[in-house]
Length: 277
Figure 1 (cartoon, rainbow, N blue to C red):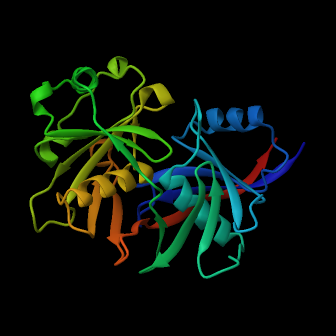
Figure 2: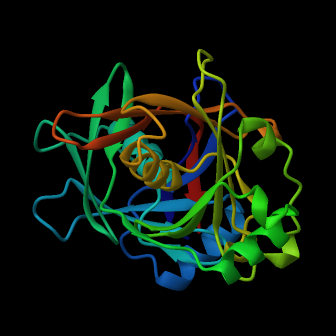
């Protein structure tokens, strides 16, 4: 039997049980791909991450990320939660910022206003076809005309980003889980100005092993690049996610003068123990 340090981190919240939980396995070198997949299926969270020694000398650690059904090259809440766990386990970055190595390459993290934030990775945008919009509309149980705009967004994960008329329309969705046809769909709607949050977000991925993700850093990074670039949202704002499923995720987006978008959130350890295999 082998043992490894294990943490479950609540991400994008200051309050226990109201963010997106992440399972983190420390010292995962030596675990096979099949073993990692089995652990991810067992935790049954939207993602489980594995901390390993880096193979790139510029990185502080290497990260592999699994859903219950697939490995991801990048994901936001595992990036923040894993950095939190690595630092809490006495990890010391070589430079001013934490540098994570993962499937999309190197991702930088910084701490600002007491919370971790990652630099949004490069984003590829493409038009969404009429057939894809029709599929998304069926899956969301809305009319195609309810879609204000849509974009294909790729930053490691592949999303279809959909904007509805407002936040209330996003919160009212009751999806048909059987109708997504392999698409991972992120839906956004603007809140009225002056509130705590500028944007309401929901992300659905039933074919990736989860139905609705509580809070999704990678999609929020993509949505920030898409919507701030289009002038729909200001350079800095707060988004809400998880509301419809009883969570209170808050995603803090900030844009530097050089155009770098930082996606941040609060993190806290809720479980710390030993994984025995």
